[in-house]
Image (cartoon, rainbow, N blue to C red; front, side, top):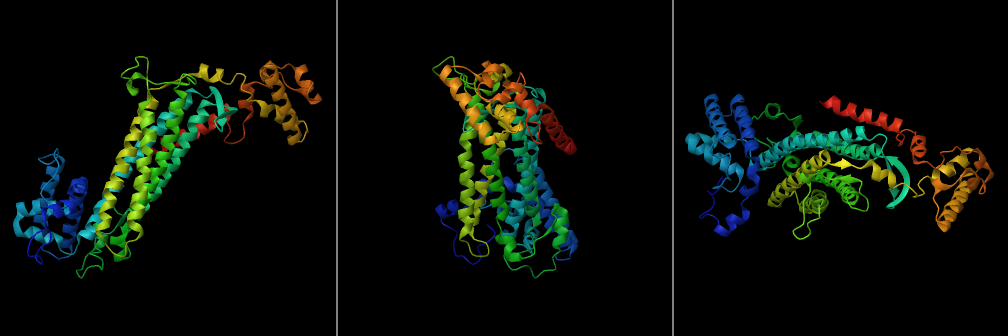
Length: 460
């Protein structure tokens, strides 16, 4: 332990187990060592400890780092300390003796854990951003193959207006793009160094916080020592970003579940990303999508957990804050796993343009186009809406579709239909007409696709 002189005995075994954070904060071991190397260099650079002592400490830390990444500790769980900071210092003392104790000069576990957490989340966040980009690429690849594939667009889960599949898929591209922008914006706030704040009040030593920030790739140092050790906004904010990502994944997962049903049949999942039934031989289940949808709740719960943990805490550090790590680590693991699985499922799925087009037959989804034709001819849209409503009602009563109506049939409802084009009820004509910026017309979707490709290419 890093403390004990004031105590006559150690903690009860049950209390030691209860307060121990090593089982979960050990995933920050590499970051803890890297932060300690930067701190030791700074201590030597500033003359707070001798250059020789700093060099010994750095060499000892590098040996631990090697063991963590490639050596004896690389494939096992760490034990024998109350947290990762104590574990690293204990290993250093085993190797160096008393000089290892000088490493903790001018720092506290309070600013140390805040630094470790920021380092770990920054680096993990960078990897997660790359995962999101891969998912965007999968969506773009499919979109490029389906610029002319028409399917029913829905509102209220009812057929509304036809759209092209590329347009539908690119909607998720832009959702994920916003997720990535939120992540990139969060990175600016997580990338501030707390180390040097001490326990809460700063340090009496001539520390050089800018030196450490530069060593560790931080953009700057925190302005207020109390805030530096008390702040977990960066955890809350990342938990919120991950929750929004989970929303987007769950919405896509729900559509895949629907489209995979026999009733829809819009998508066919590869055998490698589906599962079967233990009793029904014919089943091919979209378990990946269902699990992604189901895991959303736990990600939401972790956001609520860290919010509630922080809401009543006075300045500065309180042990309650130890509870932030399991929540944010599990959120990262969960959402990262979901993105990876969804990307693979998208890569290996096959869309069914024939089933999508067939689903538009007789669904009245071009009714708005008929009303728009009258409005363009000068009829007030509300009047045009009512006329087409009568047409739809008559078709339903007679068991007919809009596609079956002739020019004469339409003219019976309004004389302006005499000038209607022959394809006025065609879904292909409908999507071609939606050429406003951001619309579903194939030419406009092609422009949108080009913009999406440019975004991805700019990052490669």
